[in-house]
Length: 486
Image (tube, rainbow, N blue to C red; front, top):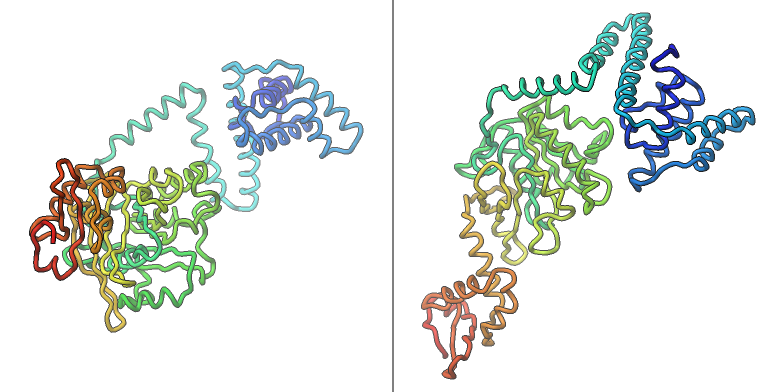
């Protein structure tokens, strides 16, 4: 590498002083490999490593003379070289940092020049090895630099590129399941354990391979389906799919199951070299289902800093052509639709809450209630699972949001009453007013204490006395009973 103006020793010393004293100005564009003076290169490498380690924890962290000298001396034992480093460090901290736009522009030019030289040296080696494909790849990587001769040129190029892309053909919203699950979207199913989330994903996978129906009159688009899971044994999933009468081995061209018993096990979302984004691009349009989001990333799910990169990566899959289905646990509170940071709910474009209605220990119905939909109306599905002769299937249909909410609220109000004791209206208000409002409670109490209702209501003759309610026994509720005391 040449060491002449404008990128000679004086420039590199100014750049090094700026990097050490004001790292926020150039840390994202400087690479220590491009310094061609030995001591400058080593100090730059150490400074970049220290800032990469400590700046994320403390944005105000800055190196001083003593701390940088200690770090340099830790890697250098020769007395003469230590003396040279000490003199360079004094020059760095004596020099006032030049943060002018001119130096920043020169830095970009410096990096561009070094990248060209690095590519030329590598391309020469490729030619010697007859690796002409490698030469073309290096040239392609340099093309963006050709458009960045100056800040003004690069901004104009960016603007022109955006204008060109804005004239791409308009796209209409497409649906994997009409009205419920849009294509090329990130769709979250939140629910507690044993609520039916996995059954729903598996039913979607089965229907996708031929474009059949999830339930009657609710078709699923025919496309490739990748089902990802990182917990459980193969026997469990083989049993589940046998119940669905679905031999996934015979449909491996359209349905791929990737579980922890396979080699390699499904990589986590942010692991280096994960294939999911390229998979989405290669097999688009397709679907990718993640059964158990928590198993597919490291870090604290309550931290937006940990969850934001996960959301960005899943959005990339969707932009590459995949419909991304995600099963995740709900929070413990009834008002929390998914567990963890709000960033999880922010990055998904459609969100459903999966709730199982039980008769004893057995699931009688599964309510799939939409709480967020960027693409259309928030709807709800009411699925009825059936088990028989070792088989499993769904029936059901659309459940309107109003009916769905009324059923939930009515169930909560009735749960505050008793078959054997009279409960004052004020007691029910105290328990539920903060959750659904006084008017809603009165509306339900009035509707349920009529001739064919499930409650008896009474009010003593004393003026201003509150109503009291008692739940009818099942036999009386079926025959109907007038309001009033026994």
